[in-house]
Structures are given as C-alpha cells and as structure tokens.
Length: 80
Image 1 (tube, rainbow, N blue to C red):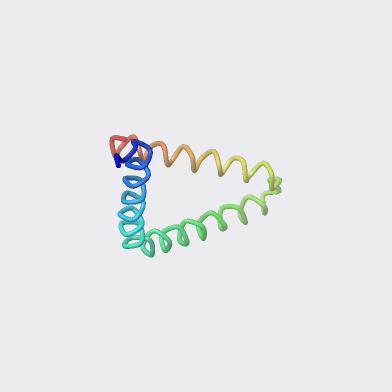
Image 2 (cartoon, one colour):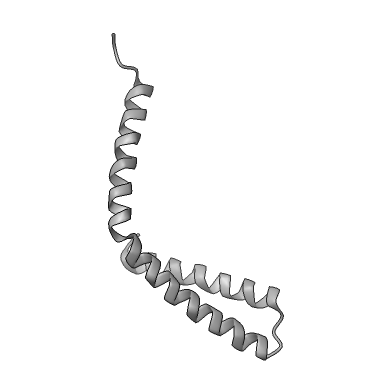
C-alpha cells in the first residue's frame, strides 16, 4: 500500500514538532527569565507613566507599539 502525500506531510510535521519542542525546551527557561526581566522593566515604565497621569489605555498601546518595533529591529539586525 502506497503512502499518500498527506500521510508523509503529517509524519514530517510530527517529526518537526518533536524536534522543535526539544530545541525550544532546551532554551525555554533562559527565555522565560529574560521575559520576566523585561516585564519588570515594562511595569516600571507603566508606573512612571501613571504617575505622570498618562491614561492606561494610551500607555499600553504606546508600549505595545514600541515592543513590536523593537522585535522588528532585532529581527532585522539578525537578518531575518
């Protein structure tokens, strides 16, 4: 019985998912810790903005836009 293209694709995707899970998990804690540090910095920024009477919705959108821009810059510097 011949294996269909769909079966091959599913098998390949299962293998890729297993490999990616292992890769991700090997670095997950380091990434988590860095996100915790970034979250702490963002919380400080938000607190300071709040003290300046900047509304929550405005500062959240502003910070979100800045984070997206940073991620895009990082990806650009990485070459991807």
